[in-house]
Image (cartoon, rainbow, N blue to C red; front, side):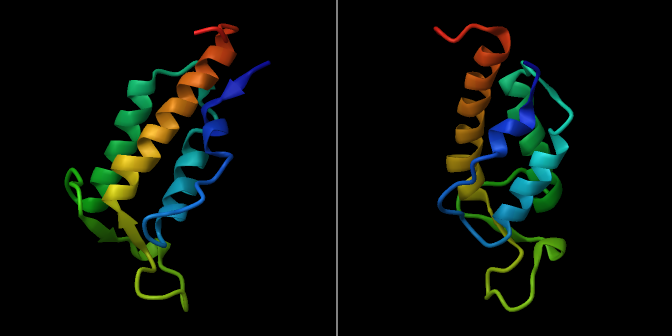
Length: 113
């Protein structure tokens, strides 16, 4: 069975950092929709960091957030369009890397490591 990296985005986190985070999650899911697994986990990490750097205008640091106008939705509160560096650095990226490593094992038939 052929696997795509976008599979690691299928299950959404139960909690987000800010209201723009789900929109970035969806953007990344689409970005990796045609990328076959196995795929290097360091490449995934690098790709997500590049997208964060593009949005933040620099490498994001703990405690920072940025506003992304295209992620802003009307009537959802003050944090609409906000991307949380803490969520991506501490939660989302480690979660996605773990999921990718598991998917890579499935894609290669090596489910015992």
